Image (cartoon, rainbow over all chains, first blue to last red; front, side, top):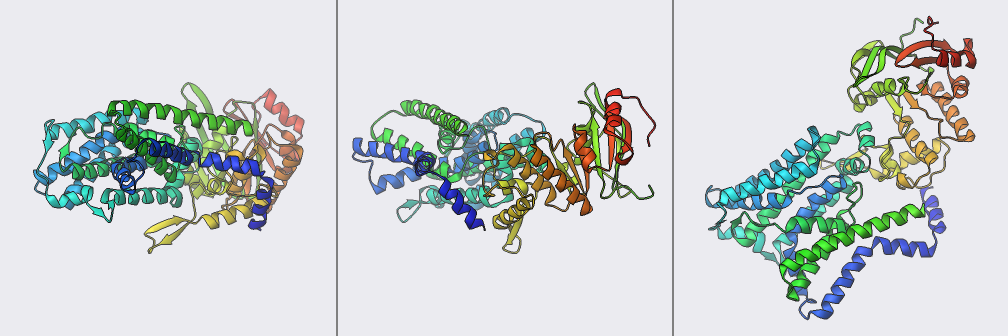
Length: 331
Length: 254
């Protein structure tokens, strides 16, 4: 019976409309290919498998951050603390290894717990004191980076064991270990959003808080959990960075907040909440990664790159807004 | 009235800031009874029902179910007691699909790895939603359509499917006929009669006395947060009820 109904609706759709819908759906992917094509033509080094794997490696930490951020933004909130928590995770892992005398696994676990706790604290104020997440995570941004700098006295922690390098610098075949970590986090996040009750509740809260509450969803708890997940992702990205840099540095990840939010928005997650997917975020991360890589290859300074990413954010939101207005007109 | 009421609300009071929304209101529903709840705007009808559904908590008063005192502090409590509410604005999330809305907050899951993982059972939710909606004799088509894409009437059907799908003992409907055409109103009233036949009680907030008179057993009138009176519909006329609503003299109850 269900098949019949499906067949019916399929025939109703006009072919042009279908193509239009497909175009709309894959517009970001098409954009990614266009940017890649332009870069392939302007830089001889861009189009190689080696460079592709390099892009994946360079952006693994942003991909991890973007997983948490996607959930947070679908929920209708924002997390400004990811860069700070990333630095804290990096420093805590390094500190535990060098000064704490702990093994690799306990050090990583402590770093991840620290990041999760940071997310939990900002989530707690959002959930139970009705703070806007903008405020509580802005505060957490300062707190986490502040602690990261206090622990390092503004310098770097060196002398990490060689075996710790595997996480950030190791590779399996041609692909770096951080890429596998990011892939695992992306997969887990995707499953969480699509196959679990929590995912369902995240979308519902982002779409209509009041309806979610009346349906018996504990809205505060959902917000607390999601911001904790985002904190965990921040610390995990930090651990990857500690291993990649082979040191603990309180200054890392300052550009990552910009890149992460840009990637998530480009990936089609709406800042209004309720809409977004992990596959979209993957494309968003690749767009940002490809642009940064291309600009590097073309010798554009990182200062100009920040300007470029900022402009791209504006464009992405503009496209999102136009898309929404078109949809409203259609109805 | 020797029978125990299904639900009894006693001396319910609620204030919002300086506004006294409800003052010592008593309200009761018998098993398989259809009660109309009427009154002017700001009479406190929705507030009273939202206290019953757990959306609000009363400042004072108590709620008894089957004669036993219960505490309803959130929507989960009232659902667990068999009370479902159809909200005037439907309380649906437009960004998720029909079956996700119907099962929102009580999603069906399947256990994996000895119950370590509970994965959403989308197939069963979709099938059961389709079944519920077909029971309403309303055409929606695919149950994985987003609710935002539906018309107002279709959205209401989704909201109705959600309240009848979980073996409720009491269904509260807040202005269910306000935005419907004549045909749809007829269908809804039929549904209410069928629910009564199945032993379900219905509380029915409405401005339209005709609708209440065509299906109801009793009507309770509120005004400015107080209970004005109660009438058995067999023993009264729309005119008398209307006078009660508009006039508002506190008469002795029948």
